[in-house]
Amino acid sequence: MRVAILGVGGVGQVSACELIKSSHVKKLVLADISIGPAEELAVELRRETDIEIEVKRVDARDISSVQAILNGIDVLLHIGLPENNFDVMKACLNTRTHYIDTASSGPQWLRKQLAWNDQFRAAGILGVMGLGCDPGFSNIAARYAVDQLDEVDAILIRDGDNSVVDYDGFCSYFSPQTAIQECLAKPNYWTAAKGEQYLPTLFANKEEFEFPEPIGWLDCYHVEHEEATTLGETIGRAKGCKYVDFKYALHPDFVNTLQVLRYLGLDSDEEIEVKGVRVAPRDVVVTSMPKPVDLAGKIHGYSSVGALVKGKKDNKRKDIYVYTIANHDEVFYKTEFQATIWQTGIPPVVAVDMIAEGQLTTTGCIPPELIDPIPFLTKLKARGMSWDVIEKTSPLLHML
Image (tube, rainbow, N blue to C red; front, side, top):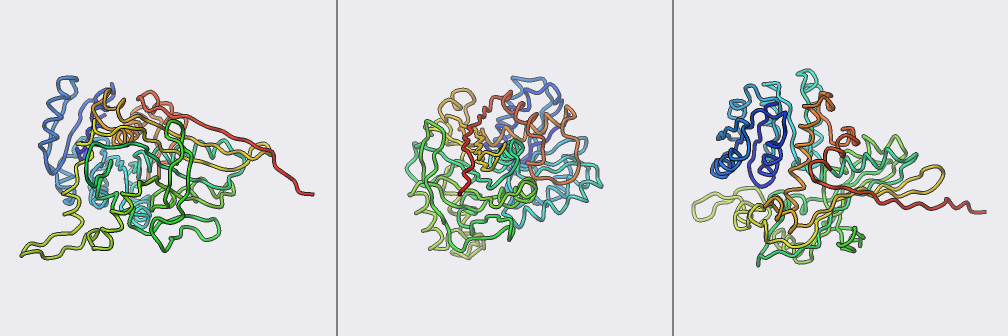
């Protein structure tokens, strides 16, 4: 198996460090428009493995640039900016290379990516859209829970973190561009009656959600996310699911800062002229923020992502919560990464494992929940990313 990683930031580095542990990986290409970090990583990895490792400068916005590194490559992990997904997908189509990414630019763009299904199938290749932690693990956790129930009422994805960070300023534990974009987009949700819909206001429907200990109760806000785009139709509707949403635990200071950015227009990606130079306001904000990889060792607390599926089993009401939880300090001690990017970088590697071992043979473009959850979750745990299940049951009450 010959694998290329396009985008060697924090998540890409996590995936690279995991891939070299695989006996089936014979070659690894590290590609980025800025090759400095990739070259430093390559030096470190070559000390640990005999796998052939190459570093290539690639512009993900240029199809020919991406194609130039795909000769003989079996799988490409695109872990760069989601806005470049289509150019990278086109390069993979042209070279018949399996494609995996970790996020999309929003629900409408995810739907357009999945609409390439017939083209990917005709080329005999697989495209997995959004296989990080959430989306990604969250979708597969939801599928696992749905499979355990006879009927499903709701699928609720919840992301929470109780940590503090040694940084005095505005920061995000994952891609700042993505964090700003998705938190300031209209929140999406799905109902069986009307399909995918959008709320008119940001940070809507705040609720308290009890995450597994030692995190506990956190305030969660309704935020735009990929899971609500697909889960209802792919795995929910057949079992009677009526509702799907995603909520994210956000600190009040983070919410307030995002609201100020929106008020000032600093979340815009449309270029403006400043003293003779054209810049996108959001790029200025992002440039002033620390890179998520640089927060390693500075975050203290726990990160958890899970899918709560409510339904019925054997004529009893049953809630199944499938989740993963990680301690930032422990992850840093073991891997030198912070937990959020580590949790995002492991799932795409598991998909590579399954392709290499013949457990993921489908072609076309799919969301993560269409991957068989049992072998995936088994391999995920073998890679060191633990997950667990909480179940609650209650009898059905028949009113007289």
